[in-house]
Amino acid sequence: MNITYKLKPDSNYFRTVVDRYYQQKPLILHLHVQFGLLAALPLLVLAYGLITRALWASGAVVGTIIFVAVCAGSVYLTKALILKRLLKSKDFGLDTTITISVEGLTTSNSRVQSKIEWSAYPRSVRYSDGILLLRARAIRWLPDSALLDSSPELATSLVQSKTNFRRVA
Image (tube, rainbow, N blue to C red; front, side):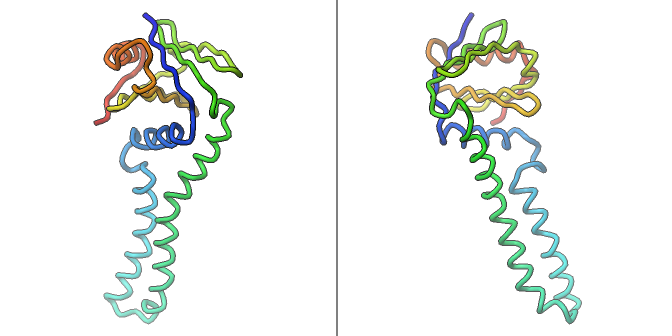
């Protein structure tokens, strides 16, 4: 059984890849949680200073506000830098065909043709709109909207039989 995806990796595709990658991680590793915890530290120190009426507390307000704003902006900056790196991909903008079968994945476009066995992608995550294949330092997003000749259910059952599979709501 071969299941074929036809896609054109563009900025929206890679933005979805980044979002799905962080969504599948434990909550503590989500960017907004990491930077939120970092921003909470000076807020706690400031709260302590204000409660104890420390002399330095009034001077620390501006610094704390700036630090919290930088942490909030860092979420977007981090995603933007990751996206910038992905947009330099050799596959960017090329019509790409990905076929998954019992043997593995075959990827082809005008620049490259490759075959990868399932052992290269030991983990996978099913989302409402596609499947994310995961391996160390590499991910592959297979959106349901790119399916040509099959259904999301068949693709899911094939990937589930070949990888450590889980669903994300």
